[in-house]
Amino acid sequence: MQDLSLWQGALQTRQTEAALQEVNQRVQGHALVLSPKEMHMLARRHVQVLQHTGRVEFGEGILPKLAFAFCDSPYIPPAEYAATLAELMECFYHFKNETGDAVGDDALLDYMKRGFDGAAHGSVEYLRDTLLEQLAETVRFAGFAPLPEDIPNEDDEEDADGEA
Image 1 (tube, helix red, strand yellow):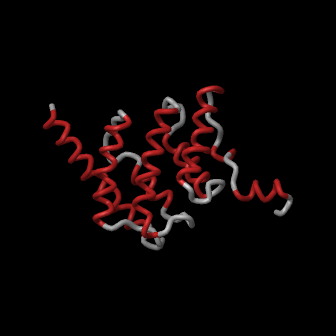
Image 2 (cartoon, rainbow, N blue to C red):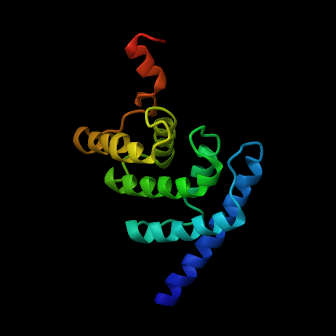
Image 3 (spheres, one colour):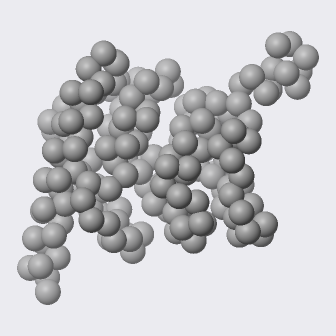
């Protein structure tokens, strides 16, 4: 059984790396791209995070979508792109579990991106500990997920201060 798990992890790592290479090719005009070493590290981390969170996926998973969504973030320095993606991936899977999968992948990804570039100003900690925690609470207690447009962003804060 251990051999099968290792084989599946290696296959998933290769699939994720290939998908990340495709993302790199599509986003060449952006400052944020991944080196082959970073792609390999992220693909291996992806398998570890899935195991840690008890999640099962087939194919490349959310990591290529995360890389594509966040490649134009003004808050991620190029040297921290891979590490930030790893943290965002952990947040994604953790909050998929916390919301009982009530929030679809694309909706959660959109929520994360809008929150990260908006109210969180690039802080993964604020995104995780405040915005995503609020999302999980809303889903648990109200039974529904707010729309990504409901995330407070910089424009909302300026409007509230009357400085728009």
